[in-house]
Image (cartoon, rainbow, N blue to C red; front, side, top):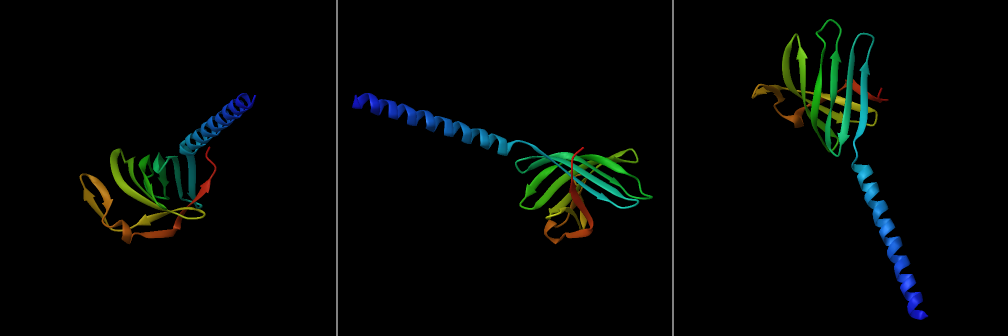
Length: 148
């Protein structure tokens, strides 16, 4: 009788342990799942939109600049979050010409601020000379918004 009771207790413990492990794995998968994030900068005449899909620290998405009396450009963005800094390549067309330039955004409580600094041309791509010396502009602060 004691042996049967101990065996029953052992199997019940084993079942509970397996269920807990399965729930933990499901939680891990959900945490690693892709999430969408959208950001917007808008004034009376200017608009910048950034829609990204975050998968771990990797991002992909679309970035669009529409400044008054300047050529609009829209394209894809692909990069990585390093801490609170998003470093990405922006591939876009403007005036029918495809270009690639590096973009850097600093994550804030409200959204993202774009970084500006000295650029150099490397292998046909505009890249920042020194990311650590970038100035992040509160004037071009993209606020987190709902994705449409």
